[in-house]
Length: 246
Image (cartoon, rainbow, N blue to C red; front, side, top):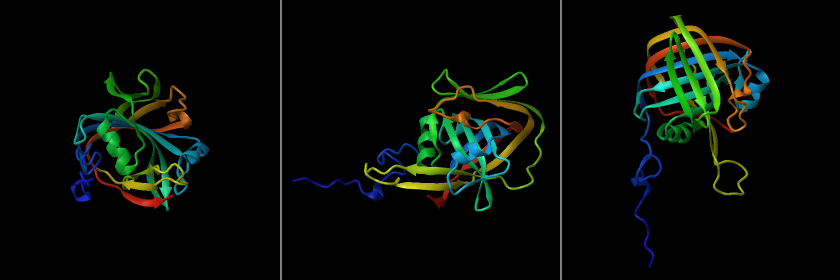
């Protein structure tokens, strides 16, 4: 006679596999993070094509290419690259993560499953040379998708307002092949806690070398660069919250 399994919901770990979770529950902690971010004006139609219907594109349409180096985190050390758009949801400003890549599996798995960050694995560098700080993104290795470079020139001025929280679209496909919609399609807001140690602004530029259909980071043309910043900080990445559904 067949016997029932003994693994019940009360015994599940936080993430899959439930008897050996790939990552723990948030929050996740970061120390000594470094980042560069280049904001640029882009084509509004290209931006509108790339954001979920509950969101609106700010005017003018602004995209941000950013690179990150995380030498220590509770997800382990890794590098990250993000292409985001400045958007609004019900009149509130946010940054929408349109593309994101990382160099290791734990942050990729946690990011996709918890917040819906559309993470993929890639080769990402974050380096300094002479008076410049730069990041590069390759996928696959050797195929340059995007790069950003900036020269810190002066202390960054305070923004004068609260930081924009991040938005992401979490989509989980239905297991049923005949399903007419995904299991879930949710807009998730995540507000990170950041303690900035230093921040600089200066001259910067971005480039999208390959027009990859598989990884369309070059879909937003660069009309003009608006700002370039470099920062060193500690960060806490908390759980998110669902603010809309599709």
